[in-house]
Image (cartoon, rainbow, N blue to C red; front, side, top):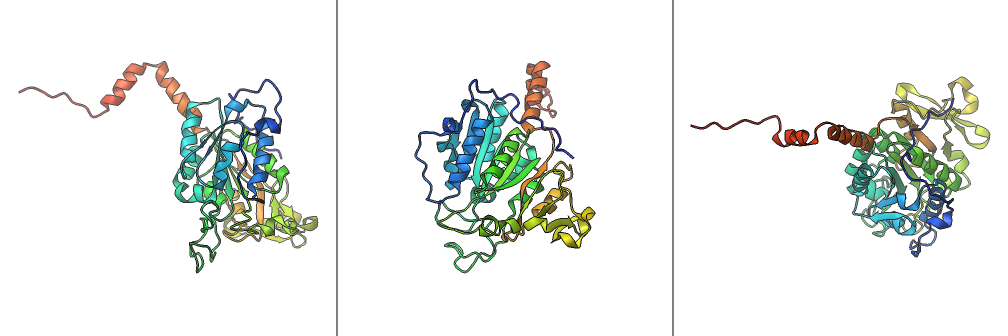
Length: 353
């Protein structure tokens, strides 16, 4: 089984006439994150991926909101905009709709995207705008010095929840799949090879690509991802490969099988027949399978976490449809169309007495 053909997300974006390397994507700005921040690894990986895409630097655009992650546009030698809190997907939608020749990237955090920006995020995904959304999830508000975020675990003690958070946390992958995003994936900041693979796939996808990246905040939430980044990660990370059985752990001793009512569960591989082990299919049109995968990570609890591409399906991109609609109207009689819109269907002529 092989992945379905990808309708190129970079179609129409001009290629660079000369090969680029990572240094070509490094800006002259001083990188200002705390020592040990996971953002450094993500930045370095993205700069290399951006160079490998082979497109012109001036046709790559970074749009960010507010937060530590939102400093990203300063550090990539391309165009970018450090926008307003939670609104990066809305701004990116306008840009992608008006400029087919751009590769548009949204860089956001768990607070920026899932709190004040939640509405903009789900509608960008619902519309399937041809943008790439990278959500850095550190399960805390880092820039504002340590308040709990929409992904903080239940009972989390922070400056804004001194007696523990009472909020049930979001599972970002479940949110994206609930909005029926056509590309949904997860990566870990410290695994640069896997992160680069996911980012390449996101760039090539036509439509909205959503990538959650586990990102450690060493100052305000250090160790939040130790269970999926430390020595025990082989027992907790569930690598997803299209067309392959979902097994993990030392020598693949754990496996994913189907549970009742469409769910999935983890079992010891030796306790089930090989035919019961789920074969990963990222191309299923119905998002319920990918949603069940996302639920293998209990919100706020990191006992296990699927990584890789959960869902990659084809659906017309909003901005392509918009351009097609505009071209159709212009090809007919644009003045008559405009007059019809202004007049509307409910018009009448006033008579005289």
